[in-house]
Amino acid sequence: MADAAFLAEIARRRTFAIISHPDAGKTTLTEKLLLYGGAIQLAGSVRARRNQRNTTSDWMELEKERGISVSSTLLQFEYGGCVINLLDTPGHKDFSEDTYRVLTAVDSVIMVIDAAKGIEDRTRKLFEICRLRGIPIFTFMNKMDRPTLNPLALLDELEGVLGIGAFPVTWPLGSGEDFSGVYDRLRKNLHFFERTPHNQYRAPDRVGDIHDESVRRQIPAHIRDPWIEELEVLAGAGEDFSAEEVLAGKITPVFFGSALTNFGVQLLLDYFVEHGAPPQPRMSVNGPVDPGDPDFSGFVFKVQANMNPRHRDRLTFVRVCAGMFVKDMVVNDPQTGKPVRLSYPQKLFGQDRESLEVAYPGDIVGLVTHKAFRIGDTLATDPGIRYDEIPRFPPEAFAFIRNVSAAKYKQLRAGLDQLLEEGVIQSFSLLDGSQNATLLGAVGQLQFEVVMYRLQNEYGAEPRLEAAAFTHIRWFAPGTRKEQLSNVYLGPGVKLAQDIRGQIVILFPDPWATEYFVKKHPDLKLSLVSPHEVSAAPQG
Image: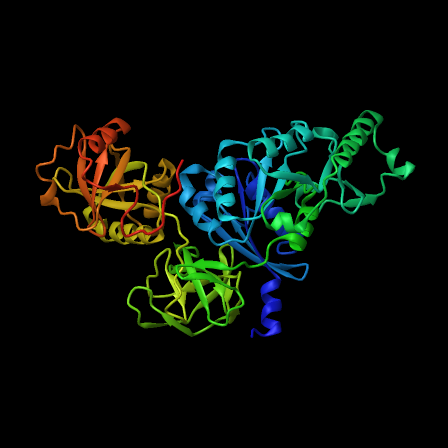
């Protein structure tokens, strides 16, 4: 039977990601949650002036230059008696792989929606991934300090487009320049906010009772009267807040506010800590594994090199699923089955790190190891436990990479090898010998920009990219040899290649060529992802 203190530590973990369409304010909200959580004292800004700080979660120099998140980041802090593991994710679709991998490691999600635009395409896709995984979702309607859609219309869109029940926990008082507070519908309190210099500090908060006439007189009549009517409409809907339905993914609690001005952020954080999901059982290939099980197990969902240029090392991100992680513990090597010691665990906060002695289910551990663990690897004291959590993706963009300077070949090779381990890109070589350059595949074009930037700035290489005329890739069945395909008509612009594991792939210039080949050769079985990868790639 599990120790009560151990179970109590599990119960106070809250591990979540923030998802959104690009520019909905996801990274700004991340920063403000850290501010209200006491993890930082001064909030930075993505659009920071030169004398201000950069956003804490954007640690890579490219992120600071571009003002976007291109890599997921872990930020751990304590608040309200809970241990918060916050994972900031890239919003752009070109970095879908990183975002989807992060979603395998969390127990809840905060979905940020631009209240002026409503539900956008990227938000819809990420929501569907969360729904498929059964992840509870909290919704933050952001940018209420700007002109927005009608709040009731935003609720209708949530329910109509996403097909989930929406319960507004807070309700905005005004919008745009008139946005001055939110009403907590559960605690029956009206929160008035005031701006702070550069929005870097917690917004002063005055709490009042809307039934108090002196409070009502503070609200201009042209705002107060329709606002009271909206509250009456919500009250007449007859819906009740249910923590159980939130955890079951049947309803999403909705919060209104402005991450930029800090309005409504603390209410979101307080309710999330109270009602967010603690660590949940995880499905292994042999059935569910309860977080309270005594045997340690976890899985690798991210590998990242050079997070701190002073160390120049490789960091492996592990989600602890069950049991207690202890420094220097021994687990089975997922590749060889031999014992391997986990000697240098780290607690992470963006780019910063400190040594860690123990971790509990729900925590994310950073491992500094000479052993090159792979994304998707299971680390466990029981060799019978194996998780199958990580989705795999077929590349949709291709380019040849060449070495400009022969003197920098080692730097290019070392950088490419590391980026391949991180899962940033995939690598192929054409079988007809028409190109002596390496063919790279990525989910989106922006990933190539990241590759070039990191090769140049982290490894000192001098690479050159050349666009390749491929848009689709398929893998042949395991064991397929080049000789078996020597008499097969491929079609114009179609090429055979092999991946880094020696598996034969076929590259197509357009969807028509793909359909033509499949129709002409029904006996040849093709897969969207490598046959070595047991997980299916998300579609769409």
